[in-house]
Image 1 (tube, rainbow, N blue to C red):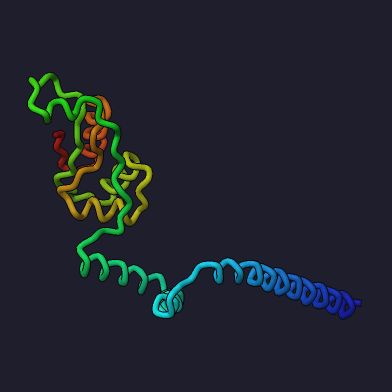
Image 2 (image 1 turned 90 degrees about the vertical axis):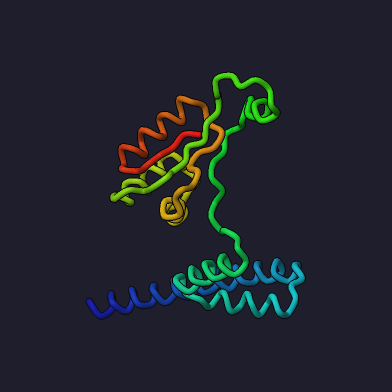
Length: 168
C-alpha cells in the first residue's frame, strides 16, 4: 500500500512539473513578441546576452569599471527637498536668516556601519550599497535644501552614529 501511495505522489509531482513547464513556456511565448517589438542592433543584442550570463559579482565589477572609465555614477540621486528662498539669497539680495540647509557628511568616523544605517534612515531611497558608497566617499551631501529642524535632526543622528557632519 505504501508503494501505491509513493507512486501516486510521484505521478502528482510529475504532473505538477509538467504544469510548471507549460506555464513557463506560455510566459516565454508571451515575452517573445515583446522582445521582437523593440529593434535592437546585433551589437547590442550580443552585449545583452553577455551581460545576462554574468554573475552578480561580475555585474558589480562591470558597473565600477564603467563608472571609472566614463567618470559617471550609477548611484541613486540624493534626496533633495525644494528650496524656497535659496535662489533669492544667491541673487545678491540681503541675506536673511538661512531657511534651507545642506547636511554634509564630512567623515564617517570609526563606526562606519552605524553611519551607513543612519544615512539609510535619513535618505530612505538609498539602498545599502548606495549608502555605503556615500559614506566611503565623504565629504558628500546627505540631504540638500532641507529646513533647519530637519538639518539639525539629521546632524544629531549622524553625529550620534559617530560621523563628522557640517551644515551649510
